[in-house]
Amino acid sequence: MNVDALTYAGHRRSVAAAAESPRYAFERADIADAAQVEAIFRRHRPRAVIHLAAESHVDRSIDWPAPFVHTNVIGTFTLLEQATRHWQGLADSGRDAFRFVHVSTDEVFGALGSEGRFTASSPYRPNSPYAASKAASDHFARAWQHTYGLPVIVTNCSNNYGPYQYPEKLLPLVVRKALAGEEVPVFGSGLQVRDWLHVTDHVHGLVAALERGAVGETYLFGGDAERTNLDLVGLLCDLVDELADDRLPGAAPRRTLIRHVTDRPGHDHRYAIDASPTTKSLGWQAQVSLLDGLRETVAWYLAHADWCEHVLAGRYDGGRLGQGIAA
Image (cartoon, rainbow, N blue to C red; front, top):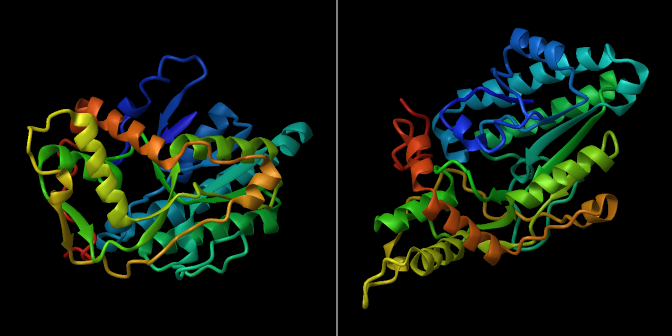
């Protein structure tokens, strides 16, 4: 049962491959609407919830923080409240088996220096409106487990990438701009460091947390693939050169399109996750190497230009976001 509000970044075409399966159903709903959520629980009687619904783009949170509070904070509260009522009404065996997996981000922990990695015991120091809204949602999820007994599991992950990512995010944005021969923006020095996790590895981790995770525990998923933003953008430009097959002899490499622009306000320097406790507890480990995953991802976007055009139409033109609260 897929619940999605289909805001600007949500499109049913992204799940078209599953739409005909008898194991798949769809409900269009806002998770902050208690009546809608209550009706969905009543109709479908789920045995578990994996809560991925969120506003997730840091730059948009800098410009328009209100939707992040609405979905990530109020929406999470509403979902927890309705899930608790549903769980309390289950028979004993259903109550024992029920799980609420709350999916979050490493950004709730703030910025790291040049050394160290985030762990499940890292203090919360969110620095962007997005990170603050996700930190609040994490705290609500844990509070519902502690206060009401709802069987909650919390997960935090590093930066995801892969097919079907909305093209406002860094990887697809760079690929599209590089392919079009447009300037490729890099915020500030570009020396900010991120750890990258392929979406399929993250999905396997969430399934492991659902099936084998302990109630009340937190599991961190990372790709052990740290790169500076500048290095990553350069590598993406190289892959577009390699895979697009449209370079003329003697043409300049697409790395020459990179332009440094004014940095994002409050840009965190470095994120990195220590996933070894998760490996020990769940038997999970990232399998997709960064280079293989990036090559596959770039190839996917090159082959699915029609999907990109469809999901972007009238919603996002590739322009700069994250400069301050919009007037």
